[in-house]
Structures are given as C-alpha cells and as structure tokens.
Image 1: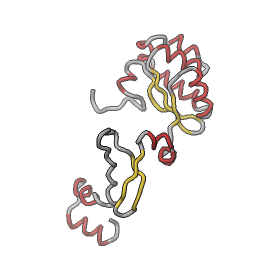
Image 2: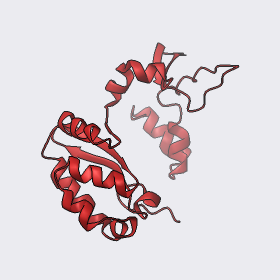
Image 3: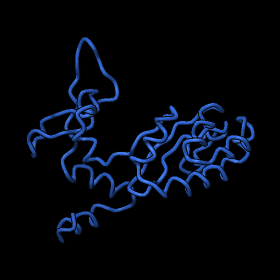
Amino acid sequence: MGDERSGPSHAILRSRGAIWRAFEVSDGWITLAVEDAPTFARLSAAVGSPELAERYADDESRAAAIDAIEQRLDELLVAQTAAHWLAALRAQNVPAARVQSFAEVFADPQARANGYIGRTTHPDFGEIDVAGLPILFDRTPVAPPPPARPGADTERILVSVGYGEEEIASLRDDGVI
C-alpha cells in the first residue's frame, strides 16, 4: 500500500468496511470505532437509521459503499452534540469518544494518570507539560525530554529547502529569524 490517503478514515480498516474515524458533531468532534457487522447494526440503531444495517449487513457491502455510508453518518452526526451522541452510542455499546483539544488533554486527570502527559524541565521555560513517551518502562521510568528551543532547527530547515548561507544571514540580520 502506498502513501496515498483514502480520506479521514483508517485506510486498511476502511477497505474492510469498518467505520474508524472522527466525525464532526454540532459542538466539536467524536471518533467511532466500528469494525464488524454487529457493531455497525448497533451504530445504525444509535443514529436512528436502522436501514443502514439492513442495506449493508456484511463487511463486503459496507466496504463497497463506504463513501455513501460515511457521508450519511456525516449528515446525521453533525445535527446533535457530542454529549447526545456519546450517550446514544454508549447505550448501544458502540465504541466512541469525544475528540479533545490540546488544552483538554493536558487538563485531563486520566491522561496524566495514563502517562500521556509528562513534566520536564525546559532550559528556557522551567517546568513544563509535554506529551508523554509512547513506551512505558516498569523498571526504569524515563522522563520525556524537553522540546527543542524555539528556532533551534531554523537554519537546518532553511538549508533543506534551498536557502544559502548569505540568504540565511540576511534573514537573521533583518530580524526575520
């Protein structure tokens, strides 16, 4: 499989008829993880469109019509709030969650408890919150490293896109970088 995307969905799961992506709702976004026919039937009931489950009862028929199904879900889901849909989806045992902003993730006590958020000391900013490491070690916990200083990679990036030393010096002299 190449680097091309098939839209906002998970490319491999989408090709199998799975609904695995974020959807806009009236006050933000939610994610759905619907991989099989029983879960799709529960999703269809939760969004008030049981005919979707009847029309696309198996993985093959969902895969063949995935664009139309996702378009219909886009139309339905945007009409209500995240709280409305999450209550309806949870009542039907459909895996779903609200998409949080960065500020919400960093303020979420569960994200901290799970190690998704860590603290580190930055040489310029002192103690700061950072994204936690994706791998956890039981015996030797590892603190996430501080992020790079602002502008630390500017020269390397400018060189990589074709700027020469004189051009970079001119940008620096002019206060652009």
